[in-house]
Image 1: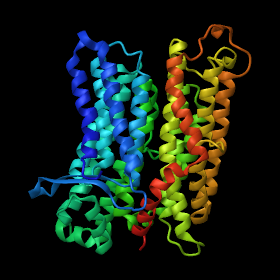
Image 2: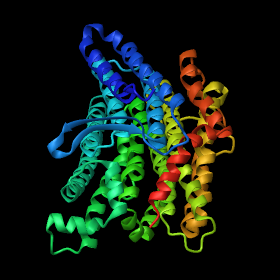
Image 3: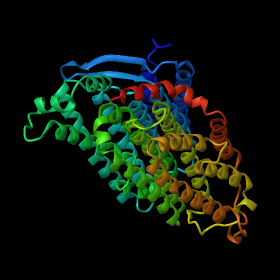
Image 4: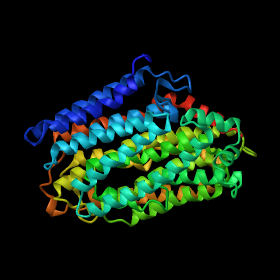
Length: 518
């Protein structure tokens, strides 16, 4: 199975599908959604084949395709996936069809809308499978362009400023990251992620950078630290790490709901993926140097975003801040795993728990957050654009199925045992508490605040007296139920049997832990 170019087929499927959709034109726009959905479901089938044939017993990269591209610049078409890449590919293949199915209200420039969603999916597939920086950076930026236009053309009243803010923030981060990786290329002559990791383990980054770049005014330690900060900035904006988060609430609130599903379910994971694929293997010493400030940033991201979510009265902004909060747990697990093991009983086991929790949290949050925004989109359509916390009340009496399905997603986000959100957060806290107890104890405040604002959401929207204005509000129709049921079923499946994911990622986690050894 590894001889077939599965990853190339996976990436080209939505790319070609998007071109076909663009070619339909406005006169045949009724075909745009079915064709886009067909391309995305084909990609889901390819991802399913990859998942079923993946060998979870090794940390090695699988389905490798490697061809010279620009040999004089060490640029190659080099793709492959390990457990982390496979997990993100599977998540992308699941979320984008959900977003396409939730896009039934699009009436303007229909082919362009669905083509851009497919181009965005292709960019995500490329980002999660590329192993050469030049190739990876192309897809990293490719995902930015369709997202910008999707917000700009089909977003809410403030879509112009939200799209511009989104573009500027992420572009500044990308430029900083590009400069840092160009410095690494000048020092090593390579763009290969795996070779960079091996070179880092074998020698001194700082000395190589100092010798090749010729910046004699900076010490090797300062120079390597500067390169590290550029990469960190580019990835931290994408997560986002507080205080680099200010683009996110407006972007999520103004983007059309299906696009917000992709932004929160997938694009926010690009930053965390970059931490695990690039920052941790290439700069563990610099991360340890900055470990205390980084842990404080993780705690700030968790607690402050939960408090900000509690203060919101716009449901979309509330869920946007909730998304930052949940990604903060990923940061806590990653930074905790970097702590040196003095005085910690069974440190390797605790690191494995924390990092497996991070992998699970990435997948689970993507699924749960996309489902919550999908439900919110259904509510907004029925309410004529209203989405305030105080605009509703008692909806469970007229829309019990909608209340039940969205309630399950809310409780999964809250971390209720038996649902998918619990296991990832539990593993993160279990591993992190043994390694950095003070930061984990402070971060636990975020769990409490999250419970308060999510339960407030349920109480204000679905419970209490029925607002007479919504006495005729329709429940979910058959198509909407079919859209939500697979996601809800997966929440239960992963909550009851998290080994469905952990068995695929555990060897990758152990391989990453071995790279962290000083």
